[in-house]
Image 1 (spheres, rainbow, N blue to C red):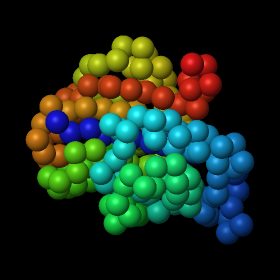
Image 2 (image 1 turned 90 degrees about the vertical axis):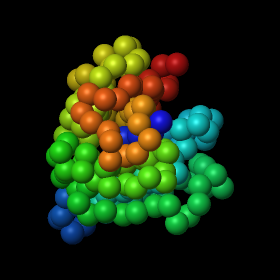
Image 3 (image 1 turned 60 degrees about the horizontal axis):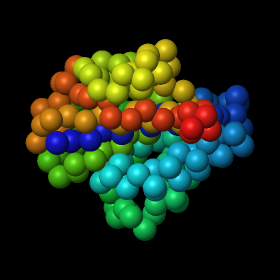
Length: 177
């Protein structure tokens, strides 16, 4: 089995000092939300990633840094890759990146951006948690996390529609629980 964790970056400032969208930092709410998702992941140890692929955009890197602080002792430091191609990637591009993850990581996390991450989640999920699928149908919000399982032995075997949604969480859902 392979487990994919799709995490959208946390809430950002509207502008960056450089004027570039890639350089937008997290807002205060985003830092708080990322910490909340990281703390939740720490309590759900079966979800901790073996490998994390992170967009090189400032907001994605900052999100990952905050999330990872909550479980840094549980993950080897070298199992993180920063990929510029995650910025603005469409579902087919994201699937290609996932398929190239190699055979070793059983749990793979991607920290990226909408609309590609939301579209990818919707296309990968063929079943699973009905309430989570309904909540995810409209949006993958900032700091939203979709956990999708695939009954395959290798990442290059996953297909659209082949995944089962195991969990869907967001800071809003965690506050409501």
